[in-house]
Length: 110
Length: 114
Image (cartoon, rainbow over all chains, first blue to last red; front, side, top):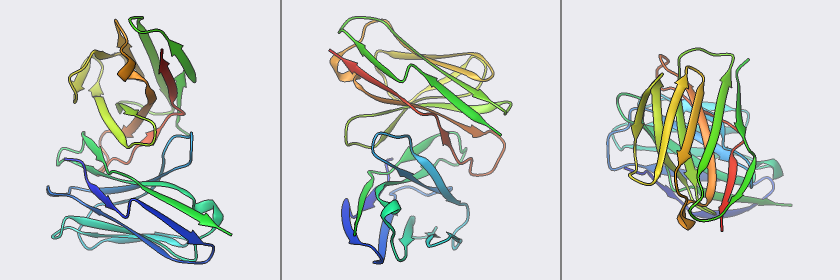
């Protein structure tokens, strides 16, 4: 039931773009994205509720392809502060149970 | 605004000792509450979730248990800790009736079983 993320790790230079993918073998009710800094708790970034939905906040955006049971997170013109581990999370239809993806470690270097 | 507290922040316990971790939420009513465990360098494993007082659902059979004695209080316990119980324990809450129900995490408790 755990979503699979790819890539597992990525290293970027400041200003470069990155895409993180999240896919599930089961139907997705909603997709959440979180970022976790080392030693800290995950922080909610955004939620996508419907297939075809796209959202964005500053230079971080996401899309949700319900039919393909996958979501992608887009980081544009990356900044040093973007470094961390990104997790996607998916919910069962009832919404009470959450399953987090395997995680993607993102490192932005000067 | 909503706030979630967890304590203690760090804990070192010997194998076989009991465990009690507490989580409280402020500024919201009737939240869904969750306990997760994160092993070093790994992802988040859902342990328990609760949709109301006294209502606990377990995701993974283990030597841990959870209780929700009050609406905004969630407790994780163990009678005898194992080495494999070491990890970063995170409590989270979500708004029960909101579609999608994004989660907000507490600061976590780092548990080392020796």
